Image 1 (cartoon, one colour):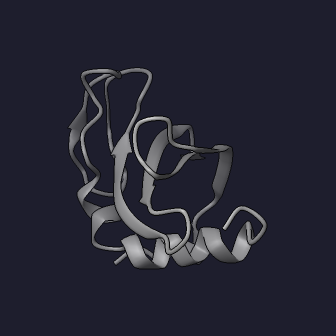
Image 2 (image 1 turned 90 degrees about the horizontal axis):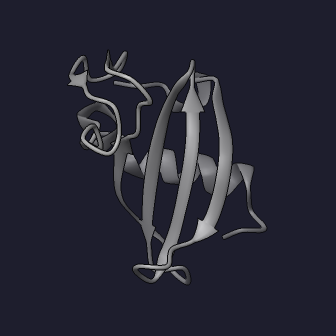
Length: 98
C-alpha cells in the first residue's frame, strides 16, 4: 500500500475539466507524470489516475511497463487502490480549489 503523505508529490497543474464536470490534477513523482481525474466539483469523488510518461519506463508503483503518452495513458493500478487517500491529500493541501 502506498503511503501517499510520504511521496514527494509535485503538482504541475490543477484545472477544471473541459470534458466532464470535475477537476484534473497533473502531478509528478520522481520524474514520472500522472493525471488524476476527480468527478463532481461540488462533492468530489476520485475517478482514476493515469500514467503520462514522456518515454517508455516502468512505473515505480504498479511495476507496469508504460509506453510514452499518448499510448502510455494507462491507469496506475497502485494509485487506483489508494484513490480516496490521494483525493484527501489534495483536498488538504489545496483547500481553496475544493
